[in-house]
Structure formats: C-alpha cells, structure tokens
Image (cartoon, rainbow, N blue to C red):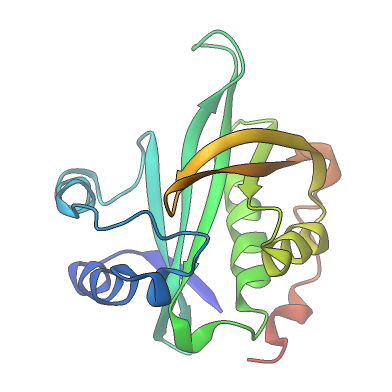
Amino acid sequence: MELRPVVEADLDAFDLAFQSEEGATPYQWFGFTPTVAPREALRTRGLLAGADNMLAVTVNGELAGRVEWLERRWGRRDTSLCWEIAIGLLPSWRGRGIGTLAQRELVRYLFTHTRVERVQATTDPENLAEIRCLEKIGFQQEGRVRRAQWRGGRWHDQLLFSLLREEFSLTEDKSDQTADI
C-alpha cells in the first residue's frame, strides 16, 4: 500500500465510484455533490498545502481509494490547528485492511511533515469497521458529537477520535503493511 499525489484520472474514478450510496457507503453518501472544487484544487495546488488535501491510496500501483486531511481548529486560528482525516476506498478494495494501513500512513505523513500536535477523525457510531480501524492505529475515542451530520434525510451523531503526536510512533514497524492485501 502506498500514498501518492492525486492525478486527474483518480478524480474521474472517484466521481464514478462515489456518486451513489452503494459506492460511497451509507456513512459517506451526502447526495450528489459537485466535483469542481477538487478539480480546481488539483489544478492550482495538487490537492496539497491547503485547508483540504488529498492523496491517492494505491496497492501494487492500482488505485484503491483516497485519504484526506482537513484543517480543524479548537481555538484561535493561528495557534489551534489540528488535522481531521477521512478515507474513501473504492468498493472492490474494502474489507482487506487497506483502510487501516492507509490511515496509519497518512498519520505518519502528517506528524512527519507538519507541526500539528493532534490528528482527529469522526465517524458514525454504527460504522464499526472505521471504529476498529481508528482504534488499531491508536486513536482514542473522546466522545459523541450529537446530531452533528445531516445525511440520508436525518441528523446523525458522530464519534470523535484523536491521536496525539506523542502517542504515535513515527518509526513504527512497517512490516504489517502486507495485511490481507
């Protein structure tokens, strides 16, 4: 499993795969959404070095999905930045452990190349696969954010998880990167 910069063809594949509830999963289906912003961000900054960023997830050179990191703040803009991560795997790549590997590698990337102290993630309380994934990486559940996300015609709670720099080993053994791929 590797992370690499996104190319235009990746966005085409994401558009095709994620523009339905079946493709996006019930936890990430927010209805049809415009895809102009990611394409503009790719053109102007490679989907890197901004408030919303993306890398492609590949397995043996084949596109498997994407990871994203978004600016979040818990106070003053200039002193309280953290990253919130997200993942979207193409349907044929789900259930193989790739999500855990990709998110772990993204956390490693963020702690290596940015000065943030905290990486966080949110997920639906019913998304047991993502909860297990985050826990395997070392994220700790901090709490429930009530009725935080509008999806599927109703409000949904979200679970908030975080991982602090000192809790994550940047030199973690990468030998587990072959899990069930």
